[in-house]
Length: 195
Figure 1 (tube, helix red, strand yellow):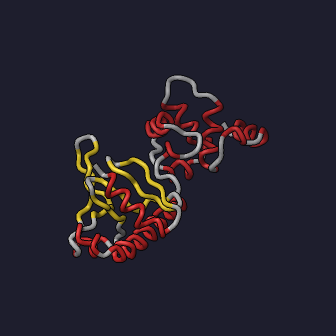
Figure 2 (cartoon, rainbow, N blue to C red):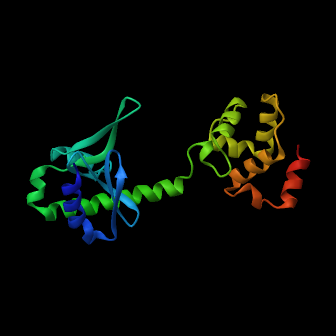
Figure 3 (cartoon, rainbow, N blue to C red):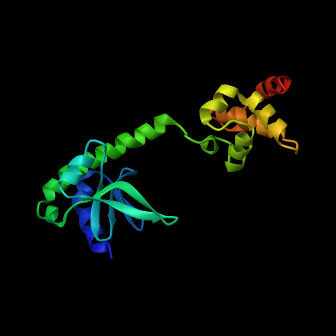
């Protein structure tokens, strides 16, 4: 049961900001201002590592948390601190500050990088991603380079059933980063003319 370790961890780390926890990875994620930087699982506190701190954590004997997903092991960037560290809470706090900084930077990188898969773009789902893949468009970059009209035409050529104009608006919105319903009537007419 992770509850005592979770309580001790929350108490110790609360000086870093507004702290919360929620169930995840079979344990509890610890967040400061909605940024997860620590994990309590298997009665151990795990701190987020970066490419720079992984070796330091390994040198200190910290082990990464590994869980199974669909039967395969997944190694996380969360490393269990050794029980001896609890004898020096200040050292945990120092490492937690670094872990929080790493997590915040990673979160910012993810925000600025944008979606990595087509289905993650606005308006698009897995079904649309599959349609585009069948039409030869497999990445977000390819979709943007192809443009909504040409992507729509490619889908029309590879699918026996007719596709609606809404798909064209959805593709345009996905490329522009907006919901298809806010695409102006003028833009819709321009797109339709290009078909």
